[in-house]
Image 1: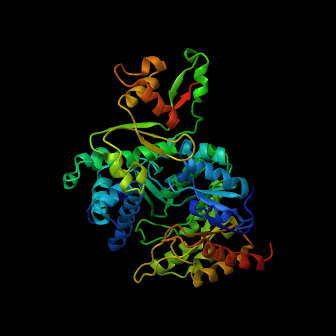
Image 2: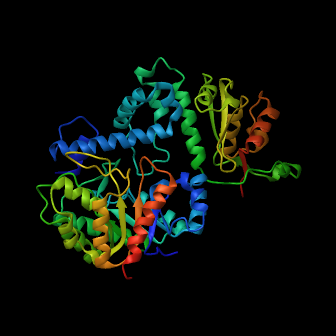
Image 3: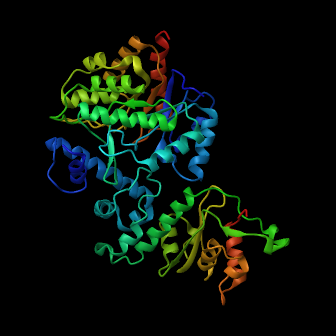
Length: 271
Length: 226
């Protein structure tokens, strides 16, 4: 089932009963690594969900931005899952998470320069060829800048898309957080971003902070992010949009209300 | 700024190699997310030692045994063995065995699915069957009443008085089940996994009827297609 240009939510097993109500949401996203197991209740539940909802698989562990080669065993696990699940879409992050055989369970930052561009394009090419499908690449939340960055992140992403043919997963919460943390205007980032390559949008909310805002996926989407979202939709029309909520999970009704708010904005723009 | 230096600093107390104070966001996130993963995987261990002790212990464990790949479903497999040498927990000598039970339950939960052997199949020619352990079957031999201690910390009153000795963990359908097992159960499953026939797999001197009753009621056997 293809992803509709409508609002979806991140699937959490505790919401399985709520999702049995017809029309509960338009689509679901899963973290691919959580389902790389041989059998058991997780896969059984996912099979149930995939029979009802279009599913997007979101990877967190490929370490696309890593200095070393991609982990062939992990790529094989990923292909096995995607061949079985047949998700509408697969996405990963502009980040690295493994080094020297250790997996650090976090999305780590990298400079935007020519060496990183060549490396990442080679990795994206390898992933797309191995999986036999296009992938989407998500923009990171930034907390720091690098002295050896030589181009804006927006140019960096656009060049990856042009060279590899991958699409973009635009995380508007990440744009907002990076803008706050590094001191730039999120609107100018979005103006420079390759919006024509966007295949999916992520929205989320964060814990309150002073000096720095952390990407926690633990709260309702904030008003500034809704405003940026509306701005993007008016430029490019409706796109599949995910409400990401991974920590301090609310009742399903609250998640559903967030998805309904996104849906209302989606429905206002012409396709 | 090499990723090697960045990664090494994340898992140590080294000064930030880049980003000054902002580097600490990543260091805190790595430790917090892995510590939370471990706590979710070993809830009875956390209950026994308390949240603060567990978090400090997890910090040490993460540096000793960071994940080797991005699938977290079984990471922490080294915890039971590591705990046995963790001096601050020496006053809880049964803790490594409780951790081993929790890890065996995780392995059982995520193992391949398979229909358990139907005992009716034995009414034909048992010698024509090749019997193997169910992919989800795990056995442990405990010196402490670890199954009972685990059960009391997992709100499972039915196992609250389980004795020390052998135990069998298995998932014949979607729910993982643990039970005390007669002496020789682990040896029987070990021999079956090495390809021995059932009559040869049962150890001499053990209560064969009890072992078979346990294995069949747990759904711990499968018919291997030759």
